[in-house]
Image (cartoon, rainbow, N blue to C red; front, side, top):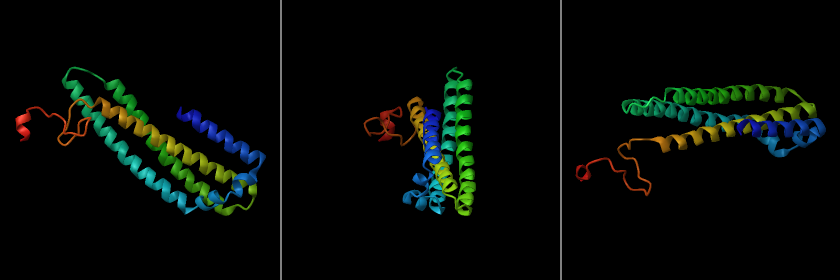
Length: 171
């Protein structure tokens, strides 16, 4: 799904740049955001996402250890999940680096076509980052549904404290 949406957005901005480059080049919103502003936005997304990826890796390790103690081996699933997470994290980092190149080029060009192409590239980069963010947070929600052991302070479904064993021990 992620690559389908990304391909669709890419196709739309390529067509827009090819047919009517002034559409993206003269857009006042894009003119304002394709600057240091987009760097600020994406660096926040990148920072939050990389922290989330680190926490997911830790949670996957805990889940693997818990299930291994019960005799269940999910190593192939963990390897695939970690690989996908790493690809997403490196993809976001790479897109941020590409964004910096696009902004340098954008500052050096005056042609309407190339300004439109730079704006189109930024739209694709932002779309990719949002899709990766969605993918990672969907993984977090799936992972929490697999959490097999409540931790101290974890909430139950109704907002109450999760049952941690002996009810008399919490009093």
